[in-house]
Image 1 (cartoon, rainbow, N blue to C red):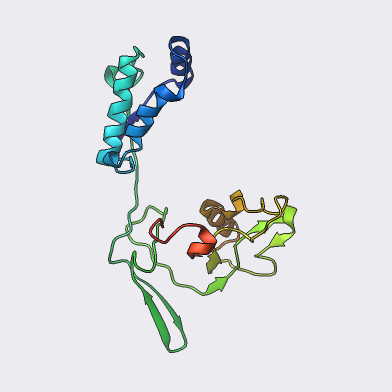
Image 2 (cartoon, rainbow, N blue to C red; image 1 turned 45 degrees about the horizontal axis):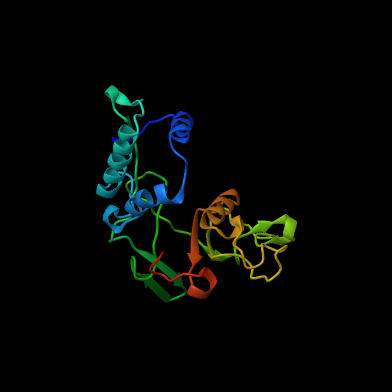
Length: 209
């Protein structure tokens, strides 16, 4: 169990708008604190997350907002389920008599949303380019390829282009996001997705991953 802020955003926004003018000068110190390294990313259920919610609740109280949470507080208890990959997790690839073992965090980062204590993947691997099906751009990396039950390997980001009318040019569209690639691979029936990271194609280093 954890707790989360419970407020009527519309009502609080209207109240604050009536009392104060919204300005960068007023917002800046709050953003600086909530984005500081002290809060360690503000993850749910972490020390930083608790500090962030306590800070916001304190600001609500100072502004005179009426609590709408449990037992007269600004908080509401909600059940959460999380999954964390353990350091002993292993990934290996085999072709013929050759095998490659990948080391957790050094060579790969992996997560699962299956909410199981033990998740095993074992299957053929298929490379599918960028893993994108974008009919408006006449692009389909899955065309004539059956990936049902397979593990797909694909590039991060999207096809490079300088034309803003083609995959947004240098801008990143939703097709280049990790979430889209997971969603599309799921629609295609794949059991797992591995995204190949390089700094030039992603625009950021492996330390971000």
